[in-house]
Image (cartoon, rainbow, N blue to C red; front, top):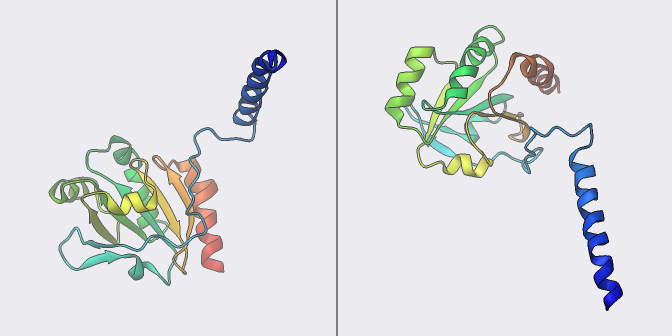
Length: 178
């Protein structure tokens, strides 16, 4: 029994060293927040449309490769990525759909009127239920959904020009070819 007590600190040290060795390996991105939904069907949802005309639903997105962006008027990083979303929608013709996450519809409409509206359709997720189903940690979060309705990629935080050029656009090209 005494010997086991002497080995306990050694075992704890080895467990802690193993944890840090895995967490600090060079190929690991500490910013990455893995999603259990990658390559799985996007959660089913039907949201009232921000413009009051109909709704935005997961069924309505099937059959095309789309980008779904969760945003809010109160979100400063959302404002930072907004010009990039505008460029994607206009210059690259990327089909982007917005989901106003835990936001007042009038505030969402106001911000889109001020900054421009990159979305082909915008749903209102007032209570955050759809965001919860997607696993949203906070806004902005962006998802790429393929033709069959499967989530292929998740971007946490504001999109950057580098991420768009190196990851998002190549993925969209690949999915549109297949």
